[in-house]
Each structure stands twice: as structure tokens, then as C-alpha cells.
Amino acid sequence: MFSQPAFAQRMRNLLPFWLDGDAPGAQALAAQYKLRSYPTLVLYGADGREITRLPCELDGELFIDALDLALNAGHTAAESLQAALGNTRPLAEDEWALLSLYSWDTDEGQLLPAAEQPAVLARLADACPAGDACARLHLHAQVAAAGRIVGDAPAGNASASAAQAAAAIAAAADRLLRVFGDTRLARANMDILVNSGVNLIKWSGARQAELVQALDKAAREFAADSWLPVHDRLSAVRLQMRLVRLGGPSAGVAELVRSTVASALAEVQDPYARHTLVNTAVSALNDAGFAGEAETLLQAELAGSHSPYYFMLSLAAAARRRGDIPATLGWYERAWRASVGSATRLQWGATYLVSVIDMTPQDQPRIEAAAQEIARDISAASDAYQQRNRTQLQRLAGKLAMLTVPGPQAGALQRQLTANL
Image: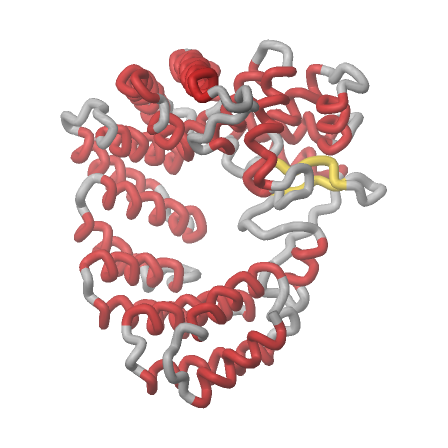
């Protein structure tokens, strides 16, 4: 998207800043600005206020439309949210649209704590005037709820509560069917449908078969849309494969996955675009039951990848599914040693050592060697205990605490982490 002329034109009035998570102090800065997920795209005003966070999954014209709304916004997303919830003033149509296009997945508590998102997004969706923004807000609310029915049931009235829950599920299913069945609306929300459609259907009760058929039809339309980038078309085919598990049409889908992967890989040669495509292709092949082909693809792409350690993690996961412990730990170690950048090395090192403790807790020499090297990486990082680094080290500290008799290096690392976390 960044290479497109339409985006470049809008950048003339913006000052772009790319925060590399491995740069010195980047994790501390990320903690300050509530940035954790890669990628997170935030638009700030000239006064430093955060205007909004934009979803990175929107493609082409949809992304440009969202960016234009943000660039022309008269209010920040936080101000619009406060006005909507407090009913202090009516929101303009563009405000509702921008709230619906907010990247709730990367909010990190800036607008709402994660635990409050289901209820608050449902309130927003109910208050929103009918239209595209309303439909998208309802989708966000259903994704955030993840199957939970949000609302206050009458105290002490179990039958009323059950009836309320059933009514909420029925209403949610009706809304999903309207989106799935509307070609334009489904296309506008393709990012949500591809990423979360299967999970939305799983808790739809008696309407599941109907919803599967409707989403499968939408996925087939996505896959046949020549205006979509090849990665999105492959993601749509993968969605068809995932729907087969819920009873969707199965005839020829597995072979469609295989042929679509082959044609997509033949079309994309740019190393960065190809890296992303390979990740999707591997997931699609695994979903279709072609695990061996997925591993073969990963190994074939190692030499040409600018960051092969990501593929090595996938190879470790594949070996783990097979129950091959030596291969699993071997790939995790290779990924760690191939990784570059302080934060990346901490993440991959912690992943490796956690896996060693999980799978071979008796292998003290291996644990000791890794603990010693990770301790050096921690000392070399200026923000080892900030943001994503902190999360990884907390996970590692919990695993080290499970060792019955830690060796000197593991014990020293555990004490170091305990003192700083």
C-alpha cells in the first residue's frame, strides 16, 4: 500500500515515522505510546494528540478511504467515543465511519480496556445510525465478545437470562447473514470476515449451517475478484478450506488450495511480499492437510528470505505437531541464532529456552548454555524489561521457576529476572 501513488500523494502533508522494534530504546518508546503489535499504524495531529489507529488489513481503495477520513477528522477517535457514550452531542456520519474503521485489535487500552470492548462496542453499534458503519461496529462487537453474550440479565431470573442469551445469538446471526449476503458490504468488511468469520460462526447455534453457506459464497467471490491482491485471494481460498471443517462445501477445495498456492507463489517474487505470502500459503496448505508440502515450501524459502527465522519457527511448530522433539528444539535454536536485533533475539531466545524446559527439562547442559547467552542479551539491551521484551521475559521467568534444581546459570537468570520484572 505504501508504494501506491494515491498513498504517496497524501504523505505530502504528513511526517512519517517508522519505529523499528529492535532500535535502541524502541520498546520503551512503544510502551509510552501504547504500541505492541506489528504492525500498528497510528495517526497523530500536529499537537501530538492521537487521532486514530488504522487497520493494516484494509486493501487498496478501502485503506485510502479510511486514511482520508482520518486526515479530515474534526475530532479524535477518543473524543468521538466519549461523545457517543455520553450522548453529549450527535456524531457526524464521518465520525461513526472512523470509529467503525478504528483498529480495535491494536488499541492496547488507549480508548478501551480489552475487557470492556465487547460491551462498549455493542453499545456503540446499537447507538449508530443504520448503515455501513453500524454493520462494521456490530462485527467488531461480536469479534470482541468471542462468543460471550454481553448484557445485564435480570438478577435471579435464570429463564430470562437464557432467553436473553438466545435472543442475542439470534440477532447476531441475523446481522452476520446480512453482511455475508451483501456483496458490497462483505467486500468492505473482508478483513474481519477472513480473519474472524469462522470464529463468529462457531457460536451461532442452530444458524451455523446457514451462515457457513453464506460466508462460503462470499469467500468464493473474494477468491475470484481479480482486483484483489494475490495474497488476499489466497486468504479467501484458505477461508473456504476452514469452512469445510464447519460443514461447508468440500468438493475440490483442498486441490484449489494447492493450485492457488502454486499460482500465487509463481506470481510474487518481491522478497518482502513473498515472505508474507509464504506464511499464508503454509497456513492454507496445513489447513488442507498438506503438512508435508507446507514444510517443503518453508525449507525451500529459507535461503531467499530476508528474515528466515520466522520460517524456522514454523518448521519448529511442524516438528512439534509430529512429536519430533529433537527437530523441534533444533529449529527453535536455529531461529534464535539466526535472528537479529535486540528485541527479536530476546523473543526468539526466550521461545527456545521455554521450549527446552517444556520438552527436555532434564537437559541441564542445554538449559545452562542458553540461560547464560540470554543473560548476556538482556544486559546488552537498553530496554530489556519494556513492552514486548518484558512480556517474553515474564514468560521465561515463569518457566525457570518450574525447574526442580536449576543449574548455576539458570538460577542466576531466574534471580535476575525476578529482581527486574
